[in-house]
Image (cartoon, rainbow, N blue to C red):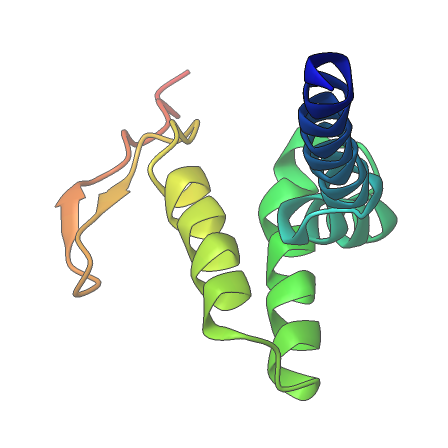
Length: 111
């Protein structure tokens, strides 16, 4: 009698653990939203560092045309803002309002 009760309890524990295992497999089987966005980015990007920003803009335009969730748009906007903060090779700096902070040096044409 005691063995039957223990076996019955172990059966419920095993069923609970198998349910958790199935839920974990279903969770990790599907691609996340970030993976899908990065996949779209990889389709648009040609591999050049200077074109990375434009590829994210293309993904953003695609999201705007398909009425995507705000969470996806926020992720792409975050990636775009991170790229905009990166170093840009130039001698001219511009404020967000479009004003020049430092003018480029003029070429020496005295020879």
